[in-house]
Image 1: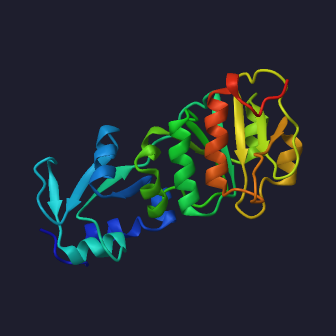
Image 2: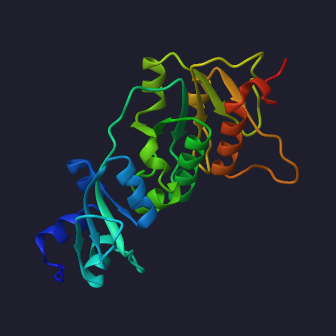
Length: 241
């Protein structure tokens, strides 16, 4: 059992709470039984560390509770974590979600989970909160491991790929006419500012959700609704004509 916070392995693991070390080593920490199991299913796990023995897991290194707290920096540390490889980007799919400057970890985690649920398996992140933030990883409930996540600007994506761009707009519509065809990309913007003007100008269509009694919806709620509708685009009420 590792009992010292000055152990070199513990120091290396603790450094992964910082983005620069995750990027440098292309490794991350996932916390809790469910996320550990999902990481194992996706062959991402390098090592397991736990504060108690688990019959269901092999080759677990035991650590003391205060060592686990040091590694995770959590007030209530988990009983098991996994050191994992960060999934490598894959070819871009035909149904893409682009997130532009989304800053809240909870919103990002929810959107990633919804993206997987509605078959937006490629997600482009344009200057968003770090998707390997512990809160984001917890919010995805393992969806992160089954998505193709690429960090790129909207402009760079638009220059390289032929996807039809659909941006959300809080007050105006440039509606679709007829059936939406693949490939396409749905763009969601920053929580406070929405989609940037330059991105709106590049977009083929603008979409908004009509609401009653409230001016607008949280980006994760709005994005989930739009992904659900667009995944069934033949019946999509946003499509006019």
